[in-house]
Length: 286
Length: 184
Image (cartoon, rainbow over all chains, first blue to last red; front, side, top):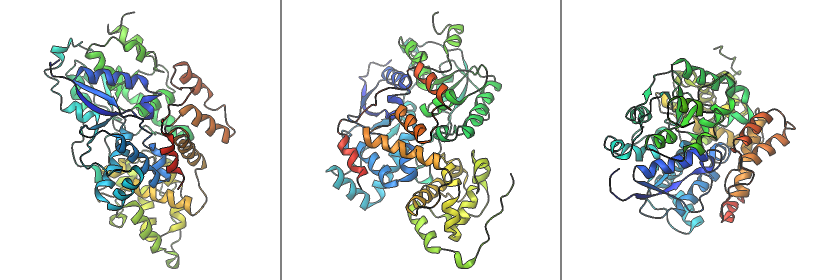
């Protein structure tokens, strides 16, 4: 770890990481700290609107995202790790940048003009800028011997208007290979998990999830690694296969590699228990 | 994939004003769709749709308003943008679905997937109450409305056992800020 002081960034956890996926949140905060990034919770943040606001009320989706911008302190990027939150926030920001009426509404609702310099970023973007080559050795880095299927779901897809900048395809493979893991090529890496259909149409989601989980196992993977808390939940909740392989949050593996002491509290929250695999691999004491 | 029988197209029924309105709402030009079917081939959920995504593009091009607003496709689409990245004409197809859903609600037409709509409404109700989503309450209210408390009971119990469902919501302090957005 370099001696440079940690950089503060504003952090938008979003509802999933704040509640159902606390283990994702805690491991993310911890692994960021290890790479010199201090995630400072955006004070009094609200839900980005999730899939439901833009699905039935675009005005509300825009306004909900905007309140969060209005809370962001100047001079720091606003970082999210939930792909869906990131997309919702970027969508609203895109409108603000391109639509005078949207900026007027913002000013009227939140009593200050929109900050055109506010940078909205996904965790992947921050990670891509870190020189990981130099990190692990200086960091008490634990070599992790795991074969994993990288699972992005739909998180790298974006509408064309938001496609400027890097896509970060392959970032999980590249990063984790550097930490000793073996990444596998498989068919379902970018297949959508079904997201909110899991509630109203589990009949659609269950076969999709089973195909994904089966595909990962058949590729020879010992586990899946995902960077979306929604995907993680859907895969765990809707999988009906016998003996499914465990699914890790990307941030959990990063934290584990960087030498964390808190991981027990995360892994005990998984519906598909990853602890037997971790113990077998010597990554967790019995 | 069987190709569904399309509606009879009566030239007098084509509502080009509707077409223009959806184009404005969606902010994307679906008139450039050349029916290559890349969207429908890649869509993970097309098996469950009555019109394929390319079919919906055709409906809005032609202004076949009733067909476009009452298809189940607009509700099954989750906005995963798999179609978008495959579309050679760079059409924001989920953006068109968003616009159609909103119009379907404004026009009070029959909703073919009422459960999906109820779920969205419960999510928004939760955001209105707390400023954030409270998953346990969303699920309970959704299931109560459907008179179906049993179907996912074991899923709920497994999540509770792993402390994945908080009993109390995570709240916004200045929730009035959020509530006022729902007053319009």
